[in-house]
Image (tube, rainbow over all chains, first blue to last red; front, side):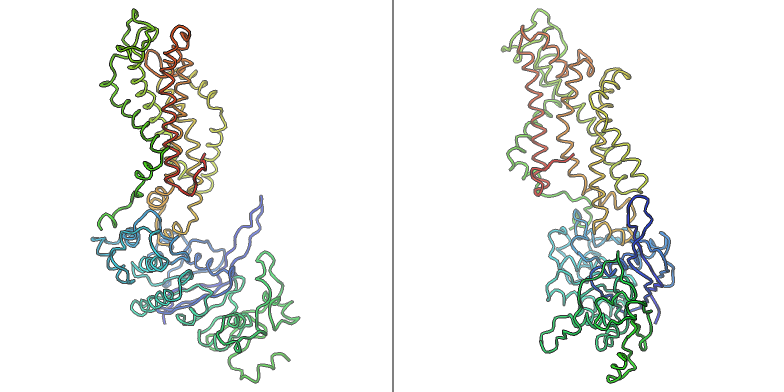
Length: 329
Length: 291
């Protein structure tokens, strides 16, 4: 399949501030990621793992310090590149209501992409009505202001606006945040339908694992700005290779108390990016940590077809259930 | 529906009604409208020529012929007050209007433009506002000579930095707002972001500040004219009337009183209107001051 978005060794760092200080704080480290046409990739990780920063970097809102990015084989580096790519890629922000300009009507806001990119907009009302119909909203809503919308409506407006110019790639930052469960399901079904109909590639940023299972073909796990595991969603959930992924999955609330795994629970807080741990950055919280982990940082290595993990003791998919203990030697 | 889709600048609904419901705002609105009417209709409602002398009728107390009495040259005070409103409001609104426009443009540029430009502009704003207003005004008037144009020039110079700083702060806060980032992610250029998305959201506090500054400028104009540094006599400036009346305070106290009352009422009117607007436009910030 054709690659739509391709990131190679992308790093982002921020100036630490301070007078005449040149110190910089690494937020993302050597993230590589590819998304094929029609594919849906989920980016998961705790707060502060760099998920949103990655999305902003892709849209050119956050300059990258190293690495290369491309969309449909067009490089993304100069301002002109991003101006062009913003026609082909769209981003939905985490706070749907706050990402709508407060003094403008919904009708104006959802037709704005046409105005920005100088696309023909012969009949704004009809265009607005069609876009609203696509996301299942009544035409009357075109006359409303953002503060008059419910969270679900604002989210749908965000979807309509993002898809107005039929992009190739949609980046959705927490598309279900702040919605109640029934509305979450509606938004997710809407996104799935539109992907099927329009052949969109999705990059979905979330820490909601139920959402990942529901919509993502592949999952990429970030920890402190590094990819620690990636692979097909079903396989990663069935058999996580990295202990962090296993802990994240174990931390999901389960209705059946007998299925809860206390031994995999994550201990402690996310370490500060200001003081990164030595060796493997997860060692302080890892249930499998040894001496080696404290000294040597593991590399991202293949653990099976289409799967990668950054762990000295990664569970490889070739291994049988019984051989897993051999790792502990 | 068509207005909903095309309306790039929707007006916030119900401002007028809320302002009328606010008693202080209503009082301010009535006073301001009254002074505006007075200024606009001066040639028709003034009973006499404001600079016509009638020395025989000097220092007459208020009477049926001269409702507000006459001054030391026998000029009708009511006519002078009415024409004075035109002068005071004309100078205040022109100079504050120009200063507001300059402040708005420079503030938006400083807040949304590159960092180095922001640094230069802030340096200019800060140096301008560090000058003591009256002394600066005196210095400029000494160099350029007194007159209406000089007065407007001085007022513009001393007021625009406060407006520019207000707009810059508002703009800086909004530049990181989600909807501005969302606009950038959609590919919107700086012109579109500034004109369509920033401007309508930063202008509210500026309108309020301007409204509260108009009385300050009316007072400044009156003060400088009182010192014979503003509008040249025989023009009927409220400050001139006060200054001339002050010389004859014992002989004819009504002159000072009659010139003082409109000054006080205009000041109160614009201040009330500004406070009312502030409460109506931003109910969260009731009691908070800008500037």
